[in-house]
Length: 576
Ligand code: MSP
Image (cartoon, rainbow, N blue to C red; front, side):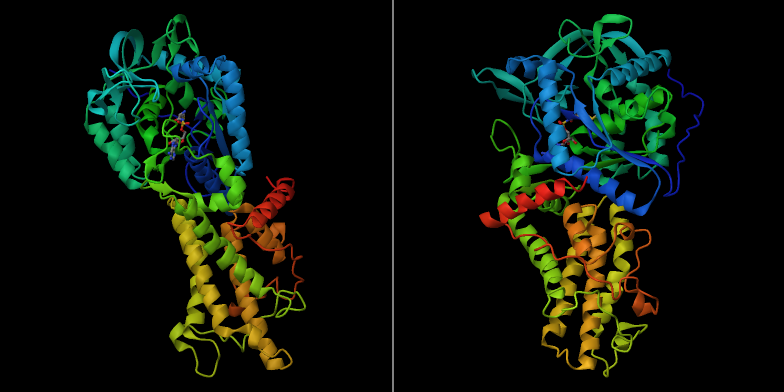
């Protein structure tokens, strides 16, 4: 029976927002090029990273990489008539390129074929062996190469193969499974039911959103068989040999999971980061991250990760994405078509972690045009137009024009400010905290929905007061006009700041136009409409930044696509 080792001390401070954090994406299989599902995992993690950097000065890292070993890759290389190293080199490069193109600000990229990673895996294996949780046994079962996993009968279905012969397939992937009987090293997963249940009971937010937490709790009530953690080398050569037993190859999932440790210097220096780790993973790999990984960590004398953030899948026009259906969506093409920020915005605004989301092109065009181009871009364009702001400055706020009230219902009949205007000011003032809460709760789509709704509300404010109708020759009208513009630009400044983690280039363009300097863009010191509270506003009277053109070109016209491409090229040289 496995016994829990003495409590460990970790150098990573566990609580408070000022502590360091390691964020991770899953590492991607290199048997095929990147698709939008992969990008979605990475964008979620990237938005969390960027948001956190704007909130706190404490160190944060984002690790990603490629999962290069295993039968799946060995077979893919053979099918492509190439060697595994050559396939890995090429496809790993494609992932790196796609992530860079998508402005994913990863700090570390691990390839499991790297020597430093392999060394960490061998050490981890040694820790398991020394912990007495490995034994050699004869293992047989249905193996799904696509999932790199043995599957129980409950996850299988009967089908006919291409020749019409009956065969078994994985319910999840539809791929054929093969009966496999081998001498393997087994991991005593069954001994970890109590430790895992205790971990989850003590950390109810460890797996998020909650339906996935509940799902893991249910798995723990079911059968928890021991896990085969090696394969015979005669069948699988493309992997890390078991230390001191060259007839066996370490199971690719054990190898891959250890990337989260090797990246922070396991076995020497991981303590500075571990277990202050948040893993972003798709629901298909939840079992590996929420059962096997924490159990393996406990067995190796380490703590489970702090949080596992789970997302659902993208389907395409109602169908699962698959090579055989030929409906795999290439993120590189999408980013060229919709712009990097347009596509980032779409995936993060439309993707809901709790449920599957459906992708089709018309949806991207409609959403991005209406929220980024028309609502946000239109508002910036209208409120900075030379016709109403010829001095091109951040206009002044007049307190008598916009008197402070404690309750929006107090709006005076004498003032031009309506109850709706006061509601807008109150709503925007509380928006940053609301957005923080949504990021903390892994609901980035809700943060974006909320920002979009405030942008609409601000457009309503602008429209209601028709500043373009005011007569600037009349000093009283001029004060009111300036006040409307000041409030509008203050709203836009808040939206620009809050949108940085999702649309970094668009936000940069917006903030630069509003003359918000690089040192004025973090979220920790964000103050909205200081003048309304009788405090000085550092932006008031400042010369606006240069007008570098439309904030986001509407999609759908070849001309605007060309412009976006040119702008992206200019931007690539300036930003991460
Ligand atoms: N190599 C493993 C992960 C090992 S991590 C220690 C793997 N790789 S993967 O390339 O198949 O998947 C990587 C990520 O992409 C996973 O989070 C997975 O859920 C995600 N997606 C794959 N297809 C997806 C969709 N159709 N939609 C959204 N994300 C999906 O699993």
